[in-house]
Figure 1 (cartoon, rainbow, N blue to C red):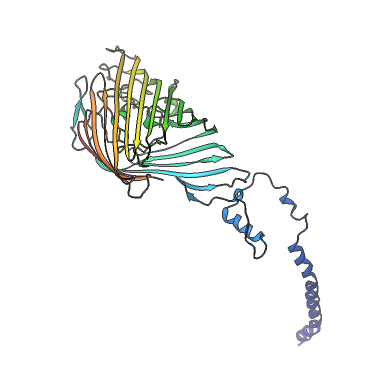
Figure 2: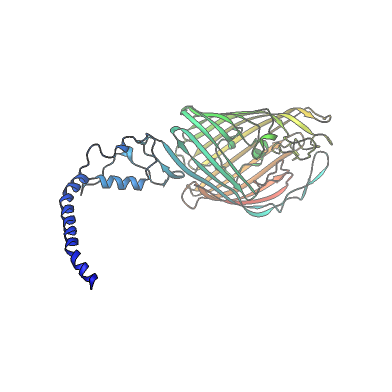
Length: 475
């Protein structure tokens, strides 16, 4: 009862307090509403102190901000310089790209090459004999592999001329995974300077033309002659319309997956110059169906003082990219004399190439000359130098424009110990109406292959019939 009386006694005061609060709030609302709608010029001083380099605003947030700032019922306005590019496809996936007006220029693009390949070499002879009469086993294969799966993250950052490329390479054939790439600065169209991993520009097939070859992959002769991939610095550009060059200083002919402790102290030097008329392009074939004649002529030169990159007590060297014409490794023990091992040698390579395209027809040819000399060995050798020459040639024609191509190709290597050659024919089918994805089927006849590598259909000493096919997707 006492509690009830106490409550009744305080109730009028509580009502009075509540009413007073409501009245005060009602009187203040118009002033607050005016403050929210029309803030003074001194409001939010931290915006004026914002640093010049800002965290990028996502396209969706930028659009929402513009819409909320627009007057009621009026569309949001923005200039092209302020527009963010939404993710889209442009010869690769453009993941993000800042607008031209943004203080921090940047662009990131993803490209990808996937090569699913079928290889059948069961019909080749099981052994071959080297120039000393020693018999060697020939690797025979029948398998399906994801031969290459490569991711390229490229673009620019801080400055539109400061470009980069981050490469992630995997292969189920060699069970390897490699991270590589480069950074560079494009001063102008005539001159760019870059540093990182790159292919020595020794042959036309090593100047950014992968995977657009006439056949399934690089030819027998190209693989025999070519250097590989290495770290270095290079310049490239187009000083005159159609005139292109690449010049590179690299650690060695091939240092992919070679540790710094095993790389020798001599550099490799390589340069190429070529002229491209009427947009000949990188591809070997005429997928673009040129209505007017297009052609390419070029040359390349490479020199290196090569090391076997392994201790002399090791019969199989880490430098496994230089073969001699009977299919054995130059730096392998016993290559030129029984129990003798070459530790160092000079490598010279000269190449000349040409191509022609017109209305679905494409012709290509490249000639090679290679010299090996000035050998350092742990025993006497019967000769002081080796000279090899060779070529590759191909012809293709689209029987259905930009859809179905038939082709034939050949390559040859002639050296001191053997002459090797191949002839091949096949078809390329482009079912998705793009030159970035195709299915290939190729048959090859070969005599004494001087080269071997599991990324390719070739094995050292092969003689017989080969069959290969691939689905290649480049996005």
